[in-house]
Amino acid sequence: MLHIIQTALELGCIYSLVTLALFLSYRVLDIADLTTDGCFVLGMAVSVSAAAAGHPFAGIVLAVLSGGCAGFVTAFLQTRLGVPSILAGIVTNTGLYTVNLMAMGWSSNVSLLKSATIFTLFRKTGIGGSWYTIILSGTVSILCMLLMKWFMGTRLGLSVRATGDNRDMVSASSINPKFTITVGLSAANCLTALSGAIAGQLQKSADINAGTGIVVIGLACLIIGETVTAGRKSIGRNIAACLAGNIIYRFIYAMILQTRIIPIECLKLMTALIVALAIASPQIRQSLSDRNRARREA
Amino acid sequence: MLIIDDVSKTFNPGTVNEKKALDHFSLTVEDGDFITIVGSNGAGKSTLFNAAAGMFYPDSGKIMLDGRNITFVPDYQRAKYIGRLFQDPLKGTAPHMTIEENLALAYLRAGTSGIFSRISRKDREKFREQLKKLDMGLEDRMDVPVGMLSGGQRQALTLLMAVIVPPKILLLDEHTAALDPAAAEKIMKLTEQIVGENRITCLMVTHNLHQAVSVGNRTLMMADGHIVLDLKGEERKGLTIEDLLMMFRRGEGKDLDNDRILLSD
Image (cartoon, rainbow over all chains, first blue to last red; front, side, top):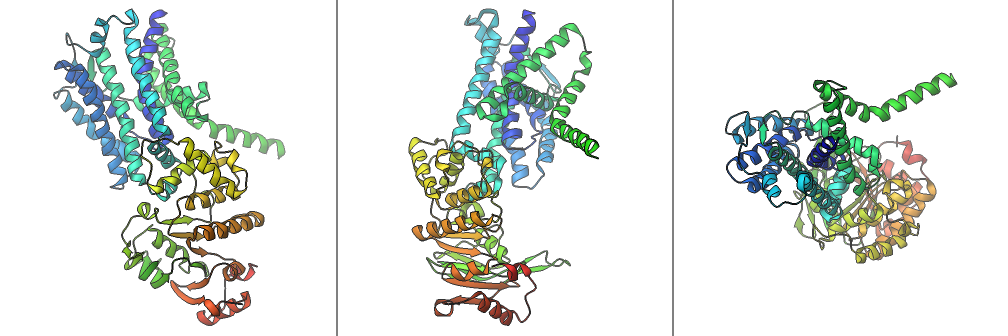
């Protein structure tokens, strides 16, 4: 049980960064950013390759920067070249597959055997005992959330929020919405890549397919979190929902893994169902109540 | 001074839907002018405003503001000098953000605050002071999302946002048409008061002929992308709605077929 809790907390903290990224792109900017899957692997590939070469910290920084570049490409495609936003993400994502292979030295996976990672280095400091992975990933996750909360209150953050709320109003405030979309998507993909970077160094490997479905899982966590914390009422709560949702999801995941209630192969299907139902629920509720009313009053 | 010089704009050129929205249109707006613009649907009034605000670049001609050619300045840069209100009160504000946050965004046009700065207590005081002028009690609800306000309140807030950093030109595109009569009257009063206080040059499209002759110092009538009637000074004094209608028929050479104009008071 302790092991399950530890795993859930550890992965929950790391993957909460993907959800935080989706909060920024999907909730705040109102753009479904499908760069996420490829960008997660990009972060992982860059960080693990750098760690293999003996630079675990530089690997994290480089991963974040490369994620920002990926986000910039997606933003550029949709704001300057008129590619529809969903397609822009898919195009970047497809291109990233090759970039990711390149980052891993043209191989589909890289492993760290004896190389130092941020986790092995942190363990040597002796902080947190056997909980050191959770302490480190939790600190990073909470720092990112505080940073996000701070950013949302700045003038630039307000402009990014307004872009998703009423784009015309942003132009009327003398700010170019193309700029705010670019800032938002770049920042979001920095976070996604950071998540991949930390996950890669934790599991000491990177795999070209590690990102498949990350965007859907991230959304599932966002929705679970928002339901639990009544998250959409304020920015602070919504940010907290990212972490809460991930820990809950990873806890369920670990339980299923342990108890085998559901075959583990079916988990992605389950996740997809959760997301589809959660997003569809207002619509379903509405049509059910309409139908009931029609039957009653007919 | 805003000069619109020989501006043309054709939509869907070369198709069956080709529409000459502005046809060699010229207009000089003096500082301090308050011009009312009337004309039937499709006369080019909104296209004129879109051209002035930079929503598109004209096919030909140029637009000058205070001696500077702004023909190819993009809309978000022009927003520093040209404010605009739409008929739809939802268009000018961000519904999920608070009154205070909306005002803070509008205040960005002043260009005085850094992009990573936050709303300060001083800003808050200033916003409260400005909101009091609207006399709607909004100054005590500054942390309420704008989506919770009524259409009239939202339009009043949009008006305030447009002038919180006084623009050189204010474009009012039927900004009271979607409101109930009481709210419309209140917004119109506020408009005249704020425009007067800040001496803002103003262009207002209206379908209300009474408004067209009673407000401002100059009246334009548009049809098919032209000005067909331009009244100011002595000519405009004592002008009645009936005069205006008659002049319109003469200028236009056809009867009015737009009952929206005929039926407004």
